[in-house]
Length: 433
Image (cartoon, rainbow, N blue to C red):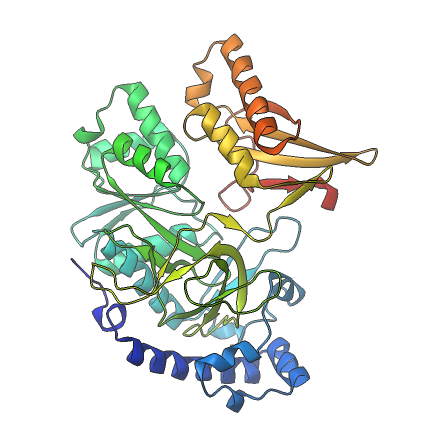
């Protein structure tokens, strides 16, 4: 089984913890010296860098939130002068300013090698042709996978988003062997090929590197069967680095978390207390190698757990359970707690697959209203008008059954829901606008 960086991916726990402590202390010193926000926090707590003498001391430091970063927009959290920043990316600015992330030349090198790890773990080699269907722009996804592939020595086809039939044509003509996409777009490609009568086994595709949104084992099975590939998951956050925080190996039994570059904690999202190993809670990340934009105890809001048991692949790094939900996505509609994942279950169950959608919450005369808008996919478009109405009624019934909330559901044109960072925000809460 190929391993890109065995020195770090197969490191012993004792050696890893020593390396983490050294890198943590260097990071704490850097932010204390160069980032006003952190220096003020440390001073308010009466903590100096020398107080961090063990990994357990990290809990002495406060958590960092997205609000902290927003208050220091755009460059207030940078730990190096702007002249040393060679790349700037940003996350979506839904309801606020975007989070701006900077990279030094060394940050880019480290990032590329971290992405190369999970690409290699999935089976990508220098002989592959990697077709990237992510949006090229301020969003980190496309560039992260692009440079990771080039680091391995693979050839990159920077297709970008959309134009499904052209994507398929390129796969056929250029003989792409690796697909980089969101899980939902991979399903869309599979469905369109089925409509066109294209046997996926006639393509050269063998691997799918899928990320950017939550997905399930059911979706993995559908994608693997529909595209005749092996599909693996990877995890990243634009504010932390982008893709390259964790990724699956071919065992597909959790995402290997790159602990030599990122120190993970699992906390109780309500109290902030650090939980015992194996517990489910909110993932908190401290960067250990970032120069331009280091983060201390950043709250990801993603709910997961960490598994420290050895993996059959030989890698020793902890494995992170696939993200299934967030700690901050609960909606209260007319006094009822509603999770977007429940709505997703209703939509996907009705369409028997994937469909782009968004939950819109509004308030009229002190009454909360929820509407689910679904973009017309090829699969929905082929339905007769009466069957489209029946589909909408089915979605409404499923939502009511799952949540107890009556909601309106409507179809909109494909591509009409805004995608500020290349993907649709699951919730648009107009009560907060």
